[in-house]
Amino acid sequence: MVVKYIMDNNGQMRVIEAMIACIILIFGIYVTSYFSNVFVIEGGGELREISDSIIRVIENQGLVKRVIQVIKNSSVLERERLKSELKSLVESLLPPETYYTLSISSGITSQSFISLTNIAEMNETSVEKISLQEVSTLSFPVTIVQYKESKLDVILIIDRSGSMNEKEPGDQRAKIYYAKEAAKAFVDYMNASRDRVGLVSFSDWATLDCELTSDFNLVKNKISNLVASGWTNMGDAVKKANDEFAAHNRTDAILVIVFLTDGLANRPCPHYPKHVYTTCPYAKSYVLNETQRAKSNGIVIYTIGLGANTQSFDEELLKEIQTNGYYYAPSGTKLKEIYEAIAKDLLSLTFSVDYDIITVTLTLVRPK
Image 1 (spheres, rainbow, N blue to C red):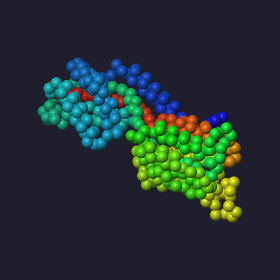
Image 2: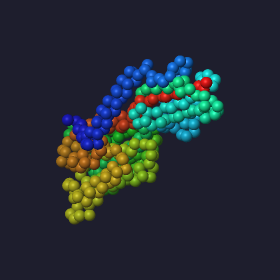
Image 3: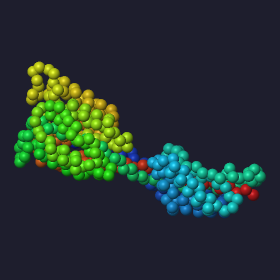
Image 4: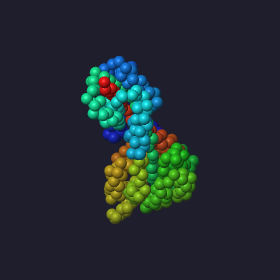
């Protein structure tokens, strides 16, 4: 198999959550379809016709969806501007001496999105003359499907230890060449107007080769300049990524690490003799501690193991530290399709669906 994808409990939960979302969404569409011409109405006559007309104007102008989007995603000033616009519209459609209360709320959570009224403008004499039989209430279910696009902050961690200068069976070039080409192709999948990419590479020690930036040409130039030599200090690489996220974090972005290695964690290793072709327990503990730090900060981690001989790298470690997938590349030529698969998976994470069934209730009062 060219690519192996390991889904942990978090991945299973994502599937379950998606299934639940689909069920609720289908139910919402069914309810909307069923109730699209069914209203809960108290009272009748002229007020009923007026309520019906006003609700349909609000719906046809797309104001219900605008209310949900503005209330959930916009500033207080924009919310007040929309409330004023909606208030002016409703009152322009009312006949003289007619008072109202308008509310828009969630039928699922009961959250109130907006509430408007001019009842306070009614004088005391009019209040005393209200006939409850002239109150008309209209409830209108609507299903909202809202797509939200999130930003991505991605740090590519690339192994540049000495073994990356070697070729895998069937490859024409060294592993470091294919790693650099695949990483640059990955950058091209990102959106410079929304996303940022950074670069960390490691051998004996890790270096932050490029801070998080939307200058993708700069990132690709830094990738092209990588030279392989030395040992394998995975822990320091993840630490550098953690530190960069902490220094230049965007609270509205999804934080991501894409980690590539062809070797075993063998630096730093204070024990004697030095571990050369085996894992150093101290070095392994270092990378586990740093990846736990990343996970606690909500960072998404993908890992890639490179090499025909899976004993040449710690496959179990890569499975343990990932959050969203472990990928196996038996040769350098397979890296490009793996990075492409990760990029596409990330793009799917940037969109989320906000579903709800909205109830618009309009109560009209006319004093006699």
